[in-house]
Image 1 (tube, rainbow, N blue to C red):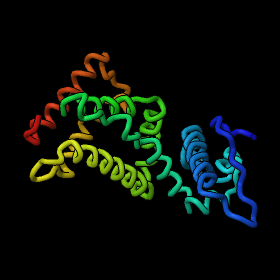
Image 2: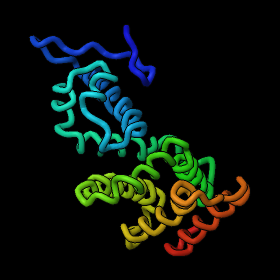
Image 3: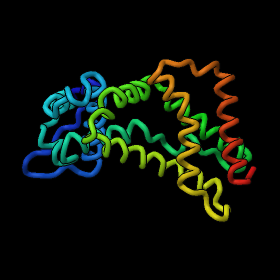
Image 4: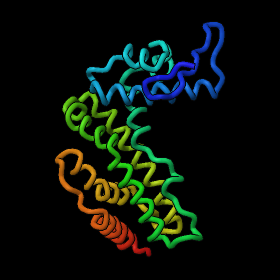
Length: 216
């Protein structure tokens, strides 16, 4: 079976007489998103065409339109896929650690995700291309809102007994605080410090959160 530029096998498209089953449809969708991410990072959003993505993924442009509707909608899915980490990567079993240790593990995972070279490239692309064009702002905002919602869900699980519940503003402040080093590195080239210094920063951020909600 032929492979795409991402190294993944290209799933065969359905024949005109039938629709793909759920597994194949998910494979095609995932492949389009991964290939689109590669092409957009190489060529920029404005320089990327759906024809180029379709060719690289081994699908038709109609297939992309059927699944995403537009290049902007595909961009949103690409950003979500790049920015949304798997929950299992962060949440530790309750029996193995205290809340502070779990939150440090979650925050460390987020920091590592944001420092990933590809995520750093997305940040630079967003700053240089997306933000300067108002029509792209809703796409970026939707991706950010989705990511804040993801973090809020995790924190609500950690502070489930908190009254009143942890609020969205607290989540956004905490997320912005822990994202600041990776953003400074991506956009300004600033040094985020040694691994030990990064760990101290993460621990302080978690302690500020815990102090703010009055829990330990």
